[in-house]
Amino acid sequence: MTLGRADRQGDLFDEAARFCEESLPENSIYRFLARERDRLFPDELFADLFGERGRRSVPPSVVATVMVLQRLGGFSDREAVEQYSFDARWRYAAGVGGYAGSGAGAGGFVHTVLVDMRARLRRSSRPDRIFEVGLAAAAEAGLVGRRRVVDSTPLYDAVATMDTITLIRSAVRGLLGAAAADAELAADAELAARLCGALRSGDGYAGSGKPQIDWDDRAAREELIDSRARDGYGLLALLDGRELAGPVTEAATLLATVLGQDLQTSPEGVFGIARRVAKDRVISTVDPEARHGHKTAARGFDGYKGHAAMDPDTEIITATTVTPGNAGDASVAEDLVADLLADTDDTDDTDDTDDTAEHTAGQTQPQQPVEPQQPVEPQQPVEPQQPVEAGAGAAEDTEQPCVYGDNAYGTGEFHDRLQRAGIADRCKTQTPTAAGGLFSKDRFDINLGADLGAGTVSCPAGITVRIHPARAGGGTAYFGSACTDCPLRAQCTSAAGGRTVSVGPYEQTLTDARARQTDPAWVADYRGTRPKVERKLGHLMRRKHGGRRARVRGTARVDADFRLLAAATNLARMAVLGVRGATQGWAVAA
Image (tube, rainbow, N blue to C red):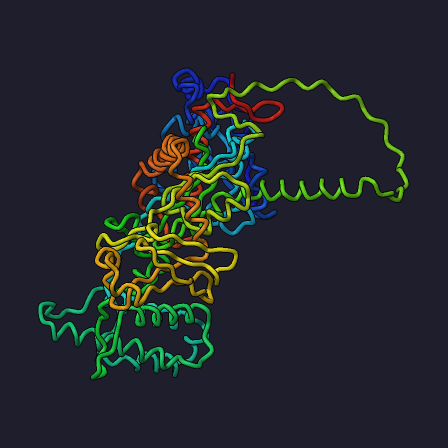
């Protein structure tokens, strides 16, 4: 398929376009896309996605416009194509004119065009180009400063969470299907027969429904679990040591994971459901990357987490990423502020270069032969750009970088990374707590000293003990027998061996962070800035389909879809702020 190109000539007598021009407000996303579409999404931007032979595609500028409006409205692919075919605003934004328009895609296209475009973008070297061009335009217009607010929100998966029996049967059925579909295994009739012959439960695994048993009968349930588990382990034993194709290997790995995470063996050798929840538990064989997650201790969900960073002054989203639901927020914090970290690293490199230049200023440098210069052409006078209003969030170059985040980002490692990069730290740190209202760790005086091995910890009763370093970093202070006759024992510990205090590798960093957040100026800045990201996440999640609930499966696809949603939201925000393309670049209208 070759690159299709949009007709940029336009029709001056198009009634639909004139109606939209007169009816839509100036800050409408439809007028913004109609005006800036060719600058944002020129067809040439997508040239690498297409070949040199075949029929012409629907112009990518048209498809990209539809994708943006689709994500803003929370439409499915079929609904988006229907909107494009019959909504004059969509056609006006895409630049195809009214219903008498001509050209590729002018009369509509099938929904699989959107599926194909997403697949082409995912396979390309720049899968996030729609987000990137919008963010670059916002930055050029002065809407991206050096402050970031980071947060996350749950994204519900697009599949049903499975119980143990359904997981096992689905994994077995997937392995049998992968083996039958593989060309080499399908040609090996003996192996195919042995796979089917390894099943001893009498279950053909043809359907996805549960076996018909009396679910109120405990013995029947236990027999069902044991028999299906033995089927699964029998298949794995048969494939053990054999060289398998990729899909069969993946299916066998998934089956082994499902069996290992949910089952345990009794002393009699009977398989049963383990009374625990395995770490990183697979909850569906249809989407094996989805996980149980907790946004708070009392609120759980199944699926993924969408993480975002935004400029608090302009509400432009600067970075996004998606992780399984059980991932901690701080695990991707550096990715969200990578632009600030890169800027500070570049500044450090420049400072080192300047220091080197000063050091060698007094040394005689060997002269290099000078090439004759070409005569310089007189430059044309450059028209001044439109000034960016302060209310639009124009960032000064001298603004100190700063990161805001809630308790989930207040880890010692992230605090330390921001400190080393010279970035102002407004990430809140959790106050230590202890079960039963006992003395928390902040009641102890921890003196790390120059060497952790020489550090000490003093308890509220004035007893001081040495810190025993751990091989992985940090250490532990044991009070032991000193707690036996201590008058504060009932308020400090209920352990028979006395109180122990764990000292982490970033203990001093966390202590300093807790001290900073008691400053009234710090509190006022935090409370006035960090909540803005909550509103922005609310904008992203206001549509259920494709917002709070994912439309696709797998981390990579959910991540791309979430970033496309952020791109569409950014473009809508830029329309509200009055961003316009000018001869010298992008600027905010005066």
